[in-house]
Image (cartoon, rainbow, N blue to C red; front, side, top):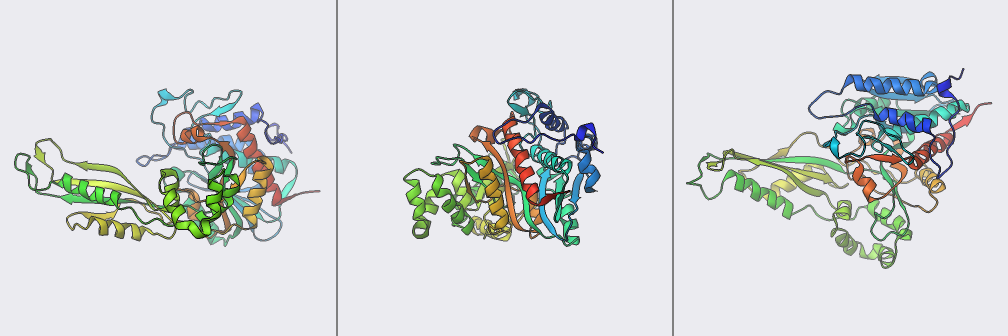
Length: 459
């Protein structure tokens, strides 16, 4: 029996907007303050509000799919007719905090819908993906679709604070069940216009792995005393010198196979002289790597990056500090490791008076999966929805929940087919996060077509 809420969903054509009811379902999810913070427990009432909204809005999903809860995280299994798993789709329910609500055009948790946009924290990162997956699944269930093999949805609740209570437990559950999928799909890449320097067409970056990350803590101590009689170097001076050495001697440049593949695929979108330069990649890779290192946006693709972010020391202007420390954040290129980062810091600092150790949780670079049939499917669907887009590969510079699911799928893709510019990218984790209704329609239709590929309609 189909309830009023599960009446057949309209199927948006490419380039059209979502209807008001569909937009409002996303807006209602954005009104739930499911904020992740390092120092506080998640707000159970707000996650409960979101759970109730999902269960009310998508009744067939919650009637036909099996659901396991891991804290506030939700693991769905859409049972297939045959053994095996075709796809694992990830999204996360939590959002980052808001620094200054007064700077927002609309309050960040008001969930405002106007003629063009759906506004609110999480509109892009990542509630729109979560809702789009459920919108697509509900529509396919209404049409009588059933998977040929199992499809899993894993919706974490703490991705923004590293996923230790959500994604790690759901991934462990899938491993215990012996799940091995063709495709793992998560957030990370988008379609950008006017962002890639020299590109004459929109660039769809379907990421097939991600960098690792680590924060290194530098600490030194001293006897202290009065500032009128300093020694040759204070604790603050010593830690500043150590930070400067690390910053001035970054880890080596390196062209990895995934970035070389990305550049090769990107060449058709580039204007001259970049198009010709990319044609020379096999013989001039070292020169191109050095060229990429001249801009922060591209240097991150060819180096483990170094970012001193915190420095502390001293208590008063006329008191010699007894202690000083600094934090340096690294995003680790595939081929390097967390241990390599720590050893590099010790080697370039070369001072036994400065202790060097990891601070907090670190993560190795993910496995890089080769583009295969599942990648080709993502590329094909992307070109159907945005015909002018050039599809390429890449690596996610930040961290996503998908790193916890390494080896659970033959192909990993971090991607959503939303078309954004540089200003849109700044809104993610920033002020005035929003998603256009046209982009949301495209996101739903992409997921519907993807899931339809793995399902078949009943009689």
